[in-house]
Image (cartoon, rainbow, N blue to C red; front, side, top):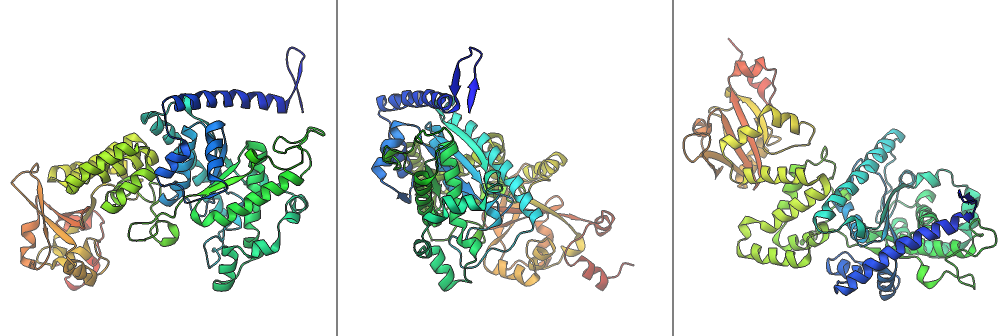
Length: 543
């Protein structure tokens, strides 16, 4: 293709693209020289020290040299099998964020097409089929979510000293934009002839699913080929040389490396006549410094070995309508002392020396949970923005030493409207009629208030020592609340725990439930409902 300039000179598109790349490479080179002058660590060393690197597919030292000598292209992808990313998804994208702030080119890929096939990696059972309408909603919401996340990354990076002048280039892509129009004959001609069945059948994912699982469909078998085609498209059109994935993606990454090299060496010229593609040497082989490589991040687990993530059944979603900002903060705040330092390195831009100082302070007074508050605040800023992080931290600090006044402020109309779109926010609230509270065993009150799903569960929660009831330390709404473990309190003691018309329960360390107690007639006039209320009225008919 030729581009006409006003001066009547002709310049080919490849040359124009190369000119832009040279200008960007010059800027990258200048930044690299500055880093070397200030004796900064290489970005690969930074990633290794923070715990991001699980395996490198390729030569580690060669990758380190390339990262410090020129701008490289990286990508990480996710299939929209749900309407939101979860906390586990952040790990490979955190690597992208770091590389972007060190001047490299990064691509976030949403698998609008590959989600329809289903990645079998690490699975023994096939994914359930998803309706097309559900798939479309998942894709649109996740694509928008990633776009918003990148906006937060820019602001979050600036606060930690990463300026626009040092940033690289970022793109957000959808693989359906090229896979939906892929010609099957072109696909088989360019890729199919180079992919050997023996190698593909030897992959752990294939062997485990066929021997231990429910078998493998042809669609699942070809998934690594589609992923490899993604990489080839981005290698050719977006300069993507490296793929980043989870630990279960290593086989797919290696297969993709083989596919990209094979197509690069066997495809026709890229549309500029007889000119040799820039990635090939004189012998028609992929140049060593342009060979595809990959790296995987570790599987996210707790110190006890419990897996984070959707398939483990305990997903912590980044969409606030699925996991509220308050609950995300609370989840991170509950991180164990054995995990918190590792999470600070993985999920934040906080420098490692600062993390070390915080951990020393934390060790002197673990009860303040200074490290956990830092972790929760930083992740909230990254996921939901700085204002939301500050607001949520204040909510948690209020609940750590709450007063009746602070809980009532959270119950104001403005606060209710503000949190109505979230899964939950701050202390949860409910209303009960007096007849379900006065002279009632606490195990039943927990059931009526929705804290326990059944009366017997309420009794078990109390027996395990996990439920607390508040009393006021002094008269007045401004006084602090003191929590006492529920054990053998009697039904006739319930009235003594109603403070200015409310009861305040706490489950575990952080979950607070405010129960407003109202007259029976008032409860019915407001068309409210509570578990067990209809049954109580049936036994005690109104006169």
